[in-house]
Structures are given as C-alpha cells and as structure tokens.
Image (cartoon, rainbow, N blue to C red; front, side, top):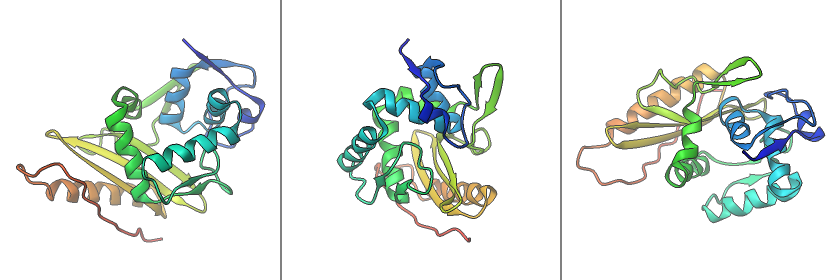
Length: 208
C-alpha cells in the first residue's frame, strides 16, 4: 500500500508518539490507525507533510474543511493539537466532526474502535477507556494537554440509535470518563422508541 515516511520534524514531536525513526516508513493505513488509536503525534505530522507537502499547508486545508462542516468556533494551528499553538475548538464543533466521520467515512471510523495497536513487536492500548466498558461505545478520541485538561469525544450505538458526547477540560481522566459515561446514559434515556432522528445537545462543565 501507499507509504508515509517519517520526517525529521515528525520524529521530534513530543509524546504521545509511535517512535518511528526519521527515514523509516509505514503504510498510510497503519499511520492512520496509529493516530486514531494511540494519538501518535509524530505520525500525525508525517501524514500531514505527506498529504500537503508541509504542515502549514495542511493546517490551512484543515481549517477550510472545518469551515465547510460548520465548525465555526474551531481554528487548527497544527496537526497534533499540542500546546502552545494547538488552536481552539468547542465541544459542539468536535461533535460535528465526529458525526461527519461516522456518517461519511464509516470504514475509517472503525479504526477508532480498535482496543490495541500493534507495531514493531509492541502492543499499545487505545487511550479511550470506555471501549468495551460502556455499552455500545465504538469510538471516538481522547486528548490531553496541560492547558486543555482531559478531553474525550465518545460515540455509542444502541438499538440503531447513536449518541455522541464530547467533554472538554476535565481535571482527571477518571472524571472525564465518568462524566462522558453519565452523559451517554442521559442521552439514551432521553430518546424514545418512536422519536425521529435529531441532534440533542447537553452541556456540562467538569469540575476542575
């Protein structure tokens, strides 16, 4: 398959990372799984440089796409989301992005449900601890930086109905996971059997 070569800039990224040395390569498919499952910042940068030639051009494309999707309060500054220039977003915009991926790219979305990622003899666990623990959860993505706190977009499918929850800014991973779990239950309990599909939004501010 198509290959992505680790660049020097990619290899210098801080954790989480895969640890691929500059000049080494992997398939694009494996690279996307590394980003989706273990938040590999080094691979994210290498992918960006492969797609657009350089990070800056890729980020411009990211922001154009976000605007097309209606993510009006989002500005990406780099492919990883790492501080200090990780950009800004909102829970609503991340839910919009998650919903788009689920609907438009169902085959790619399945990457986010993998419990582990295997590479070079190592097995790394998915950072999304709700997989296999909360009924129906099949993605999407965690995130953490010191300024932003612990973040999670999670989606659960039960009986043909899907609820997406996004929590940003929790103080701990455990607090984040508990709040997401509770909001998923609230979301499903608010749906009735004969209700038409529609977007429901709930906002809760985590205790910091």
